Length: 580
Image (cartoon, rainbow, N blue to C red):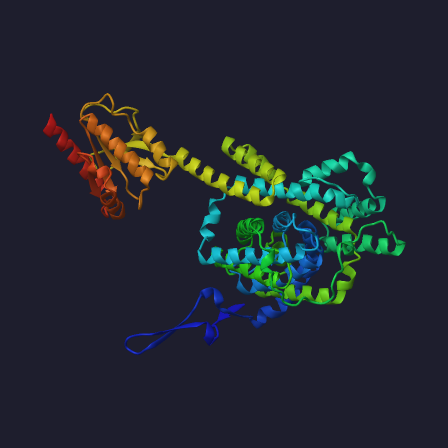
């Protein structure tokens, strides 16, 4: 696939004072796609296996969201097309995912079943809008601040929720409880509710999935697991076995665009949209890393945000549920020989053809076989090796993975995502504080510096040149305050504190520097700041804090590394000689 110039209505026209006219694309994200002939046939064929294997996955995602299976099929069609047209990661497939479906299902769980499809439509559109806003605000760089332990804890909790939540459907039983684990416990206490036909169909589907997972039929194993039990149940006429169509009629054909009702809006639904957007964006960032572009070009996280937002907007308008970058479907896309975005688009079009041809059969799928597909996927996605590695890493990582896992298991997904975000911030600040290190630099005759550990206390009539490793924002500044050498018992101590490389300082850092300068002044000493960036110098003069303390001097950074620190060091030496 290549990119060609967009139509005229997508150009920004600028008239210069000399009368010349310049036209530029409004956004590089809006460039028009053109398919290269050499890739057209290859990607057309590559899209078919993904479309076939995605049919059961999409239906299962609707079960997680608590709606008719057709909404997952609609989402997979239009999510793939919208994402394929705009994604920066050319092999990424944007479709239904377990995490997004679980988040959506949690958000609409309190909505009456009859009104749930409308609420889901609004939720999907709001989530898509939030993703587009994240792309416009260029928030892609912030995904790297989500710790690996938090993400693994959340994804493990999602897998556990899917597993426990689908056990009642696997055995054809009714179960009650405020969360998935409680429903599984209720089922364990009431085994008499189990339907033997549903249980046999579900176990057979699980057996097929396990038996075919390492064979050439692996890509079609879910389809076989759904079709065979459904055919057997239809032939035997087992009316007691729940079917997908029991939850509502499956419409035939493709959907028409539908606008949401604003009366369906609620703040809980908005919170759910934020949770869905957060889950999708972070998960999509991982998919981008796992499927690099064939031409080795780097993916743009913000444009992938936009692609997932566009995919959700299209899916919502056509009555689909939330979509995002899918690890499994992207892997199928790569294995099928896809070379560009057109494979995902063709995959969506293939799904549309399949829906047109076989929509009448969707209602006959046995519900317990869908549950088997979800349980098998949940077990496969539980990354036990990553969890073990994190548990061996250290106390902070252990707390992060366990806390996020338990929050996802026992709380609504929106609350669990909020806890995960807050925990990520706390861990980031805590890590910055722990990583801060103060060292003493001693100038040598050859102009280099000897680095050594910083003494806990200052000596009288001595000049100490200090350097700081680590962040000075928030908790880091307070850690610096605790690790600076104590001037209390010294007479005329001078500290030269090196700040090179710090473009800005926060209010907490200025408060810490001011306090330390005053403590030095009380001991008859001085604080000199070296390597000060011009922006920091303007901050100091504007805030009128540390520079107001008597004896404080700032030495601006130069192009020569260490020059301002040596200047400050020698100036401190001269001052000491003048007061002796």
